Image (cartoon, rainbow, N blue to C red; front, side, top):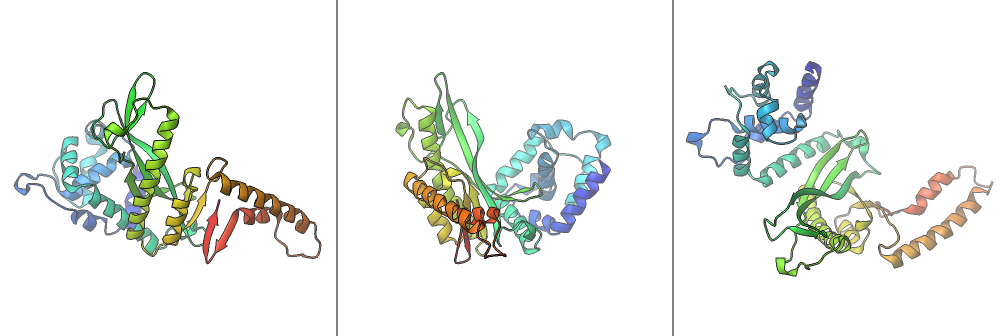
Length: 316
């Protein structure tokens, strides 16, 4: 445990030496005469929630109160503060409400920019592009509708109100997944437009529509935050459509997408026929002895599924 703590501190100091000034620069709208805990201390206290893989904010009050763990002293060292006691989880929640999500999103962007600028992630580049995986994920679910933006999923016996989120993560071959952008998938319609009877199939249709619209918003934010960074967008068959192709082309991004039958059927048929034609060419060229330096059959199969135009990689 001691070695793990030392490795954690060394990692923070090495890759993000300016993290405390960044935390100090976060918006401060609390009533200062009543403030007891510094912003940096509360931020590190909240980060421990994720670093220690605690299930909820309430677990901070139970899991990290042991005096033998010396949590207070360690958090003070991380934040470079001199607090004399640990806060409760509601103090952290109150502070986060004052800061807002936009400021913490910018902090995340600053951390990722630091890694890119220092060439820490250059080893994961795919033909010069950083691979970014895009996918929707369930985030919040309720038994009762709490706002008009909830997605509605009606089962036979009950109704669930959902708030999914679309997440973009830098995928590292070493197992890291670094978040670079997030966008909530919200129902754009009014509650009256939701059909009274909805099946799983109709829910999927609504989710696809909202997820693609959320991708357009996410792509705009991602381009604004990283205007010169080359990305290679990865996603499932939902994103293999003209809307995503156009967005990637406009932003000069590459993409690697799953492509299967049922998604843009006409294009899938053309690509299937083209692959069959190329497969026959592979058999002919691989049996030809006149090219001693010819690529292997595996690399030829790769070229069937890959096209590089103007320095941009497109793959289905």
